[in-house]
Length: 418
Image (cartoon, rainbow, N blue to C red):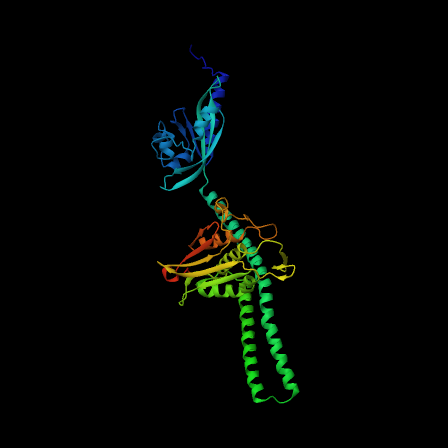
């Protein structure tokens, strides 16, 4: 009919408005948006998705989504990267996953992928709306923050463990220094009393010379012990340099000598004449060796009616001097590596305990004797120094720990900080 106006039904208006709204929203967002049919084919794709995948809408329509986003020949459904679209088609609900997409720049990007069901009037799922967001930079920042937090926590735990070791050393050194100081005091008194009685005879002067030589030797011994203890206790930043493991072992064994004597432990030390140099932080490596020595000594301590006084095991009748075992310390070089072995003659390590010895806070010691950080710290520090630590459990005959680090000549010096 001439002049008749074509009428548009209200339902047609609603459909047109809904489609316009969907188009506007998909183009307004910078995220990638695709509408997929149940066969994983792309029905519609926005500019954000085209920009990321390096395609045009015409090139993308009709292709499989995994061809465009992953440049793959099969759906991206695996236990490691489950397909959220499959879940949405199966359940009729929204789904979510983290996928690795290959973008137009040729680099792999991590994307946060969310899928939402599209229903027909009968409520059936006839399509899926997929929205993916590039979170590569966000994940990197999170990982950096988490890494910094872990390093800070590790530094704190290392320091706490060093304080525990330092407490043990102080208790041992206090008794160790007491003996030479007593000798110095006695020799000085003898010389003073003799001089007060009158001029000494030539024979007495000769004896004075012997006493003074002993006094000097004992004083130097005290100075060496205190110097080593101060070196261990000193707060130092991480300092990568050449470290002589042979010298560190000698210092540690001197500091722990009295503790071993009280526990009835006999040291058996075999060290080479030449230095055993590695690259690393002397304080941290010293902490590792100290922990291993203390663990070996404590494994051989006598059980029974023993009470702890000032960190030193003592019996009711005095200091326990019973034979506790043999501590074997040896070191050497092999194929560009430096190794240190510390073995005890204790009960060894059971099969049930062995898998857990390097776990933080795992300990078989009684309450108050340890918190389970020592070996965990040792493992972490050795790994940071590009080394490894092997264990022979020696059940029934004594455990052996072997710490292996790259020889200084075999690794490059760490770069200096700019």
